[in-house]
Image 1 (cartoon, helix red, strand yellow):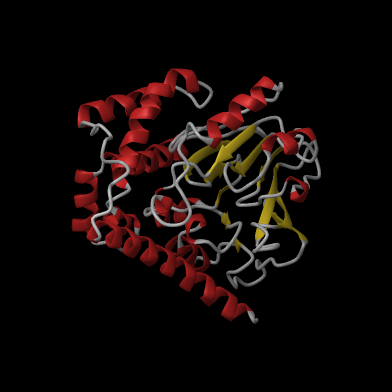
Image 2 (cartoon, rainbow, N blue to C red):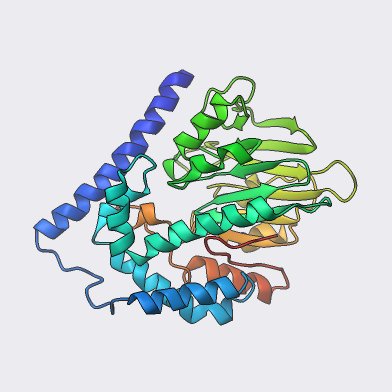
Length: 345
């Protein structure tokens, strides 16, 4: 299979998945199947806004203080599951009328928008002056990073992602699944001749399909290693070990995308923070005790709206991510579960 075929198949598969999810839900509704979320108490606007206020006033380490607010948000997410029309509002080219309708009907979509506003606002006014960067969690597996010399994003997937293009020096994408990138952002980056490092986009000099490869952009070093997504997609994911700075105090983050194997995590040093998929099969405890000597463990890919319906479920915050955090803490490791818009570092 040549590279163009690989890219085209990935794009077609992503579009097909979204369509299949929508058709599956419509078919269940037409057949009169019972709604498994019919007994959930609706979430009022004041209740949801109060939950968001609590989230804004607490940090990712305050999961106990956030628990009730997160439960309100999770109810709102669950109530969206029989109504996949909100997926249209998550596309960057969606008409303003559809976006407004989704914002009016689904409180979670307002959080989705506010989280982006918060990250962008904080990003603009934050000026790191040492080796420690600033890192924000945007959505799904997406993080935005700002160092004293540059800024970049990893697995940025959001309707408004193209708005970040003027502020980013480069973008990293772990693999060719539509919930890990926004094509509008990638097109803007490449049009501006800014690096996009991935294993599927044919960007000149930045394409990476090797098992190991290293890039250097300003004072940021990116070590790439190949990893399995699952047993059916071997070496489909690129792990990124990103070293911010050149000296002994350089800050290292490790992002494993949808890697499901602890033995495929191969950091060269001791990462300051590790980002991994909370429900792909990756055993965080095994990783912490063997291959991933990170100072902070952060499970992501929870509450991902594109997976509300269909074969791959949306992971609720009290399922894998919070359990991973609590088990790691009990074993003496530092762990946290951020939500959209949180400042991580």
